[in-house]
Image 1: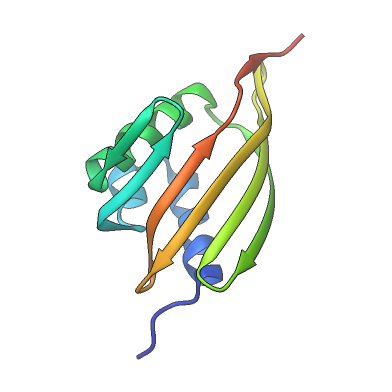
Image 2: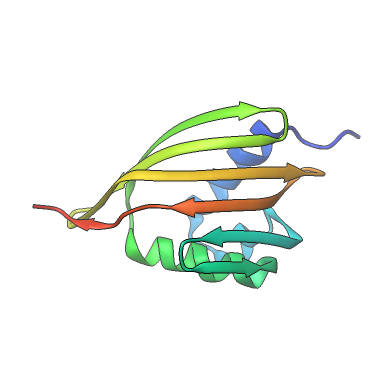
Length: 115
């Protein structure tokens, strides 16, 4: 059986994110995943849970707008999200895929209160 494509991995990752289950979400990543943010580098699935947990806590039940651009095993993702009181209009992530999982991700966004 061949490894899943990056598009398949990302689609499944989106379904996992929608559950809010951090253990399930972290399963989209390799055990040695690297997650880079302006606040620093987190590693492994525990690092993934820290970063994603914070994002989901900041944007509970958000409406998401995603603009993905795939090239081989890399995804450049522009995104926005909005809740009743907060929003992100400038989200940018990069994903690197390996063996049917996410090996590395960058995350950058500005969280603002809605006017």
